[in-house]
Image (cartoon, rainbow, N blue to C red):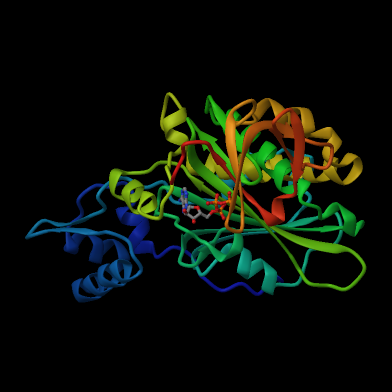
Length: 337
Ligand code: ATP
């Protein structure tokens, strides 16, 4: 375990409550080999970390609903054997500021292998330009992967689009139908945001490019979590909305790791050309009226996919204008959120 990442494992008390069943203080104390006062303190600690624990007078404690905690063995089971060998470290944390920040602070993986960090709780998740990313406990995936490109030019804006394709492929493996991508870095379902991608570069003047790829995904959103996210000014959805049966967080996270590894190896060799058709087939805004926001400007047109470098193509009065992702945001016309 060479990567110095703090955050610890999920508390055993949470493991005992995860199935959502009501457990008496006495039962919990016995199972954990501690006093009832220590159980009560543990419950208070979980609450202080933002985990809702219900107390039923004289009967005990329970979570408002069952939660599938992250489990390294189940995550690994979703990985192709050859690809799994590229995984230098896989860390499942309980609590972290941001999984991206943790990996950015750790030594980068050597060329051709990856480090992955996931966390049950993420207190300071980030989107683009420092915007906050909200990851409700038990209903989301907060995952980051560190990777080193031998050729620094591979760390280009089109990587973000390829990550979107990899995530969409992982969600299709989990049974989700109708997942789409919104340029440049959003995962959508029914014109609502299901997930986001944030790619950050380690600042190094020359040599290989070390990137950290962050994926935040809503797997299932109880109404209160949805309302909390939507208060930030976005229409939100979850992978569960796109699935016939409840999807497994562990399976989804494992499939994302697997698809990211597969994508990175191919992207390194072939670049965006290998993913452009797949991205265009998933384009949520293709042929639809859209607005590009650049500073205070709002530029209206019709979205016409992306060019060979991943730049957005916007048709305006019969002419195509291209926009690079770093400088602008894209909105569906009429979407004032
Ligand atoms: P851009 O189009 O410029 O990327 P964006 O609004 O999609 O803009 P991101 O940086 O991709 O911005 O993501 C951050 C935004 O995502 C936040 O400002 C918030 O509105 C929204 N958001 C935060 N948490 C969630 C979540 N769990 N699900 C959906 N949306 C979220």
